[in-house]
Image (cartoon, rainbow over the protein chains, first blue to last red):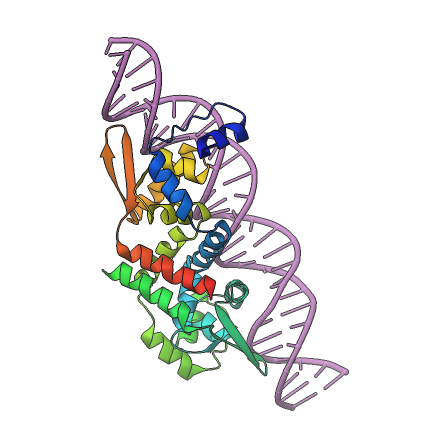
Length: 125
Length: 125
DNA sequence: TTGACATATGAATATATGTTCATATATTTA
DNA sequence: TAAATATATGAACATATATTCATATGTCAA
């Protein structure tokens, strides 16, 4: 049973997809990444795919900063910055350290910088 | 005039941001990436930050494919796939070649694979 | 303990985005 | 030319997301 007949069964209606190139499709299906990995991957990129968050990451790649420093640098409200920091924290892209009233944020590891640098190289070419 | 007094003037109200760490803030402000570059960068990551699109890129990294092949592989409608291909095309992440009734898509360059691989390495660690 | 400050967060709102549906366009074949 | 096939796309809809506002939490200093 090939994939198209699978769809046929699944949708219980005539499958409009003809799958012209069976060989390519089968080859790709064998090598396809795990769905859950690809989900994690797109989640990672989604976190980098926001103007505010990429600016936060850019700033943190230069120096550890507290929330109000970031708000100052980005010219945004403390609340908006804090919400975005939470998303980056949840995604383990940044870590934090508390010191008195302040919370200092920094990048979680070199990997993130590498990914961002690689992206920037693509932009610049 | 520092940034906070700028915000003060701009918002024409009392600025709640105290900018505790002037040195860090000034240092970061000097080294910050260009806003337009960071915009392009987040736009790039935004395109990679969708489950459907990352699966398309994953599939195309294995083989050139036409739209109906992709629809078959992703088990999605031709229309949904076509819409996402358009986004990837607009972002110059993929290129296409027409052959008769078919349109074959492939990755635009190695860079994209590298970025995705780097992201995957981060996921896997 | 009270007040000031730094940060976090829930709710509301506005906007962005992905999929579906219907249909248009383009190419091939009968 | 007409029908079939492959792809593209506009509109509608549902959902996701970012920011604001109000307020809660936590820490320090007086």
